[in-house]
Image 1 (cartoon, rainbow, N blue to C red):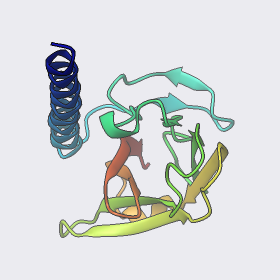
Image 2 (spheres, rainbow, N blue to C red):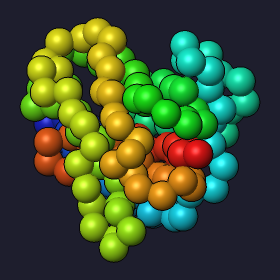
Image 3 (cartoon, rainbow, N blue to C red):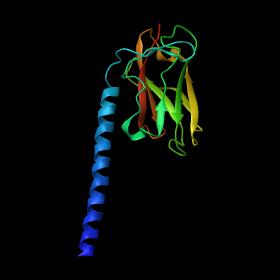
Image 4 (cartoon, rainbow, N blue to C red):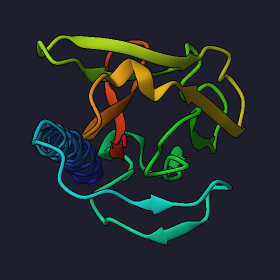
Length: 161
């Protein structure tokens, strides 16, 4: 009967949506687990943001933000003095309307704020500038881009010298 076929199609569609969400949640969890690993390697960039040597693990977009946000490598990296810029592009309206926040762990293991861009409601290129002095010691540091709800957008390593 036609209604049985419609019902089956409807149930199948709902099941696919639920499975896709579960898959994305699993992928996001794996992404967060990778982000929590110690820093190892970094994308070397020049003063203008040009990539000199890429680390494929740095600045990937999290599964829940793929197709909605892209993140470019931080520059300059390594950094000896001055500020570090992290550029990112929002591809759709209202994807991260409450801002993007940069965080890192301090020596005590506490998450500390490094910078933020609050008005991110429309598509376009945005930047967050951070002062690497806030990271403390001269070493490799992992930094995290997060939304206002604390959901991880991207992460990368910055070499402070």
